Length: 316
Image (cartoon, rainbow, N blue to C red; front, side, top):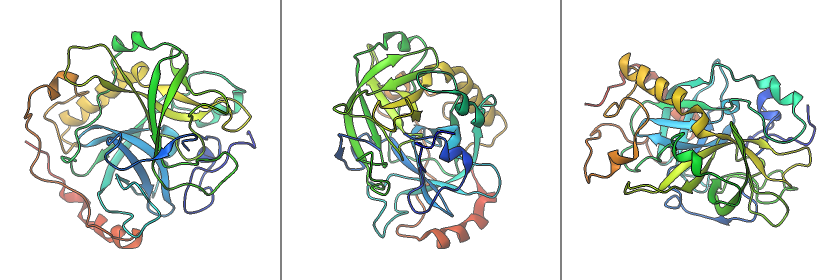
């Protein structure tokens, strides 16, 4: 295991081997509000606190990295709060009902990688108890649109991780930056490269990379990547590797569709991956139920609310 890869958790020391193997905070970025890159969320684990980032890709679905979530008695939520260090940690927070990792994700495969792109299949989907109606979800890039991705393309990144490579505890505040897509592979992307570039570091795993595409749709921005790990063995100096979202578009679409078919999702106005033209019309259905957990609740108090998990409703 690479000793350079430090823990991603904000409140406590490392909670698992998978998290220890990955890194990827926004360096050379600026603190930003919940309204900037608004589909970016913090993924919270109830025992440890902040775990990773993620992207809202449907009103009830967050895309993150597979290494960010663990099987067993772990409970997750997602939040839009820009400063997780404050008292309102769980303001604008939604509970995660279930999650699924890519079936071929292998947490031990990172041990065989020295540097550069590969294919860890480091992607997972979080399904929320209630749909989020306050934020219009990000649009997942399609394989056809991904043909536009090339080295040198300007992209946008966000996360709650470190702002300095050497500061292990400078996490918990949302930062955003314009960055550069440095390398494009079949399954992964390199974001940033070198000390002067905006790049990701410890604490940003699971978070998004956004880019604009050529399209007739009203919205041009697409989520193109999911932060997975460092590029090499020198910490954050050469930027981060993202899982390429378009490479797993089919799997994501299938999972979303299947969970609507078995009635386990809370929003199914669109059963699979939400297409860009869904947002072209001013009103597209949605849900009148849902919303956040009560503002300002502590982690221990929020755990009591899990007794209501069996009362999920599907939107119509």
